[in-house]
Image (cartoon, rainbow, N blue to C red; front, side, top):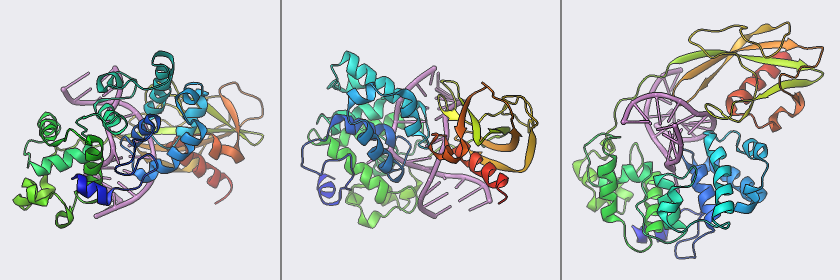
Length: 338
DNA sequence: AAGTCGTGGGT
DNA sequence: TACCCAAGACT
């Protein structure tokens, strides 16, 4: 595994080449948080932006929180950004500005769970740790042909992983397994003939490696409906700040009424106006439900304190989550006659 | 401990 | 198109 990694490691901005000194723990941590459930291609530009703007824990701990949330916009799972700030503050206030050096102490920090604690301990601090992400879960399930379905198989997969993690270079070992899972041991049509582990792989021997890991069936996503209220006044649009927790928590947003099982129409507008519904709708898919948004437009002739007025021409810099950026673009297109 | 929490790319 | 999936954490 390590020999394969030495020859095939991906070159990534947050990664040291095999054999070179470990990278800055701050950069390892930031990349690990950004990469949670998020692709390398998506993370790459955001990582560059964050490290340029906030190069270390001290800078991030002192950052304006709204600015951090704005910078995170579009990455999704916004609790990660809230915990990012909280973690930087704890590290600065209680750990002298540097990470604690043990996996257990890392695990206790906001936003750092089992996977991320093990990843930082092994990659940044050179400790032996059992790193298990979705890639490694899949690789190990195939190596040992683990028949038990996820998520019940997690303890067995972790125990199996523990048996093959070396005492030295466990960080490179983990990153090698992740690169292998990303490029060779893929969810569908794995490239077993190119795999350095194929002769040791029970899944390959079974003739159906793609059958692993076994997964439980997923529930269907319910459909919900809502309305976006586009309040415009003198070239500015009304934006609001969403509640600090929950869906899109803490993010700047376009006002919406309630989200319900049926289209709510013009219920609960953010401010009084002569609201009219545009023809089309905007659809968006979240992790556990689908959302269809009707688009309501109201032109105001007087000020409202219901939120923050933002220049329409600069809406792209407001840091809106994708669902609102999408709705805003649709409304502007409709109003301009496209 | 099952549900909550985004988004974009691949197929 | 519709579905799968991703360097998971938190409650």
